[in-house]
Image 1 (cartoon, rainbow, N blue to C red):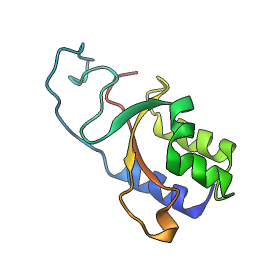
Image 2: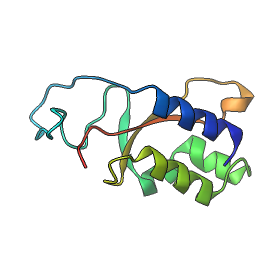
Image 3: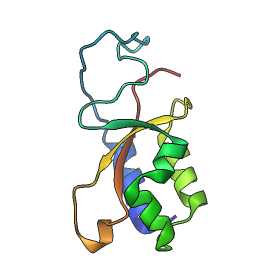
Length: 109
């Protein structure tokens, strides 16, 4: 796993993302909607994660491998439901071209 993904992983695990979204989705025991993400994050499964432009471009450029990105996804997916929340990094710095912000979704395991 490359240094950027490890840095993102460390930051994602150390900084919980908390948000509230009003809607009619069923709530989990934690009070959050099942399979829900705080804005501006988007809910994705592993297949969709691997197809995100920055992830796919990173694999194509050799900055990471499919196995690296699957391992990263699985570490972020703490509740094991196969879903995570992602958003673009927003950075255009060369070191962040293949980088996404990722956190686990709000559903309880």
